Image 1 (cartoon, rainbow, N blue to C red):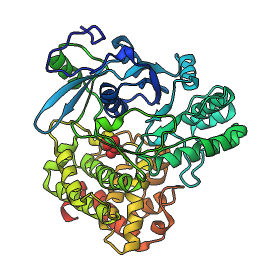
Image 2: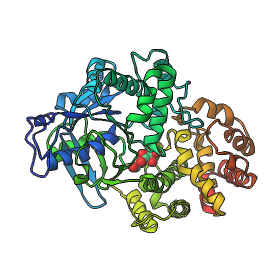
Image 3: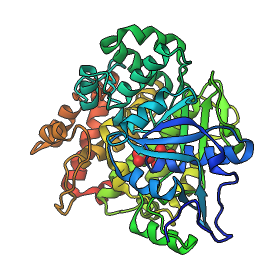
Image 4: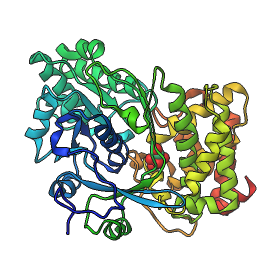
Amino acid sequence: MRLNAQSTLPDSVARPGYMPSDHGVGIVHLGLGAFHKAHQAAYTDTALAHSGGDWRIAGVSLRSPEPAAQLAPQDGLFTLIERSATSSTARVIGAIAHAWCLGPDRASVLAALAAPATRIVSVTVTEKGYGIDRSTGGVDTAHPAIAQDLATPDTPVGVAGLLVWALKARRLAGLAPFTVLCCDNLPDNGAMLRGLLVDFARRAVPEIADHIANDVAFPATMVDRITPATTDATLAAVVQMTGHDDAAAIETEAFSQWVIEDHFPTGRPDWESAGAMFVSDVKPYEEMKLRMLNGTHSMLAYAGFLSGCTHVADVMRKPALNALVRRHLAAAAATLPLLAGVDFAAYADALVARFSNPHLHHQTYQIAMDGTEKLPQRILAPAVDAQTAGQPLAPFAFAVAAWMRYTLGHTDAGERYALRDPREDALTNLTRGQSPAAIVANLVTLPGLFPDALARDSAFLQMIIDRLGVMISKGMGHALDIE
Ligand code: CS2
């Protein structure tokens, strides 16, 4: 039997501690993927149970029809399986009121964005979803959704186009703007999204640009919860744990963290009741997370995938890789300013434990995707700080070399895999048939990727070339052993 509002669930399964239909929609969420369901939807579910309010979520996927097709027949309900190293629990989340796909549900989506009741629009579309030009902070006019929306801003299809359209519609209707809440792993994500929207508006809808720049709140956030892609094993586990079929089920770790800049002029759910932390400056938390968790994740994904580790937990079981994970965590931590109340060594130990969780089947190949979107904030920014401070650069050179080796698109055994990167054509053209020195020289010139301070540091480049040379000629396993 399929999960829905009428389902009778076993006592072992936690269900919403409120009557979902008693609560109206206050949030529109763009990017209805697994991460949103495991993170913001779960926090909102707890906040609704604790403090109530009209804060249910209208979830929108911008392209894929699947999330809506999975959730709609289930009255928006889905099971979240939370896996720690020692136990697994299932919880049904009731925070999602509507699940829409922009294409077929365009009228509903636009109406919700313009509705007086909507006070927050949150976003998780991954780094590449925004269409941001990292070198200017404005729009990347080559990004397909940006290009389309600049040409036809009245029928938006992408994040920038939709938000600017909605903010204009609200202004014309005399409604307060909603708060825009970016929940992707990007540096200074609130200001980043504001800069993107203001630039988009100046180009396509100039009359609304100053309003967006001056009157709309874009609180910054640090979001954290490791959420592997759902597999057939997830769907089988959910039947076993709940007695129901659930096409929208997801698995995640027990841990979660959310640090939010407290700037919500039109109100917000009581997310503190679910453990969210409200601070005046998110940046130190965000840098800690991007550099330690995500930077190490990217390093271990490339090195691990290329040495035959399917999952992150497999990486942690290999002594040479485990040692490199710890080395990278320490090098990343050394680039961070002190943060009151946070012990980076303890955070690193906690990350080692989270990565080692044997019950979380998190694929290295999943983390390896979109490297050109991830490297700048995860690996290159801390490398610049390490360079400035005269700290060892070898850990960062190793991580960059592992990414470059990955961009060649084949394992040591010659097996091919898809790169899954928005710049994969450029990566292939710049690396095919080239020597390690030429690969490094070519990839550091990719626009907007390597900061000048690194691209001009010949000693750093040589460290990358040496490591890439070993990875190519002797294999990743050998490179790990001598690192
Ligand atoms: C991962 C993140 O896929 C990736 O690149 O590093 O999705 C990571 O699992 C989350 O940021 C954890 O909060």
